[in-house]
Image (tube, rainbow, N blue to C red; front, top):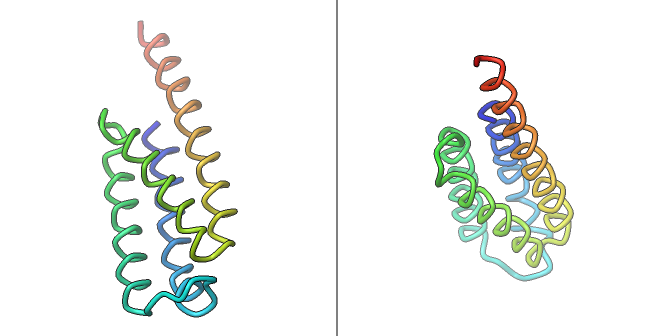
Length: 110
């Protein structure tokens, strides 16, 4: 689960960084540039930190909370709603497949 979940969150962090100018310039809600930059960087850093600790028990719920936060950013720029939804689906698939792989690996070790 570590590789799959961590990869999804790391790629999402890159997308969030790339979305900062979209939110600052093209967003539907007028957001000051400094706020878009600070919020985007903070969200991307949170995604990277959770990607690092994805095997910890607390990381899965925090990952879901971050997915909800990215989707909520879709209120500022509608394309983020689509991107957030896609990454939420990928996060769910990564968790499911990662757990199946971990269980198969544990069963094979027995």
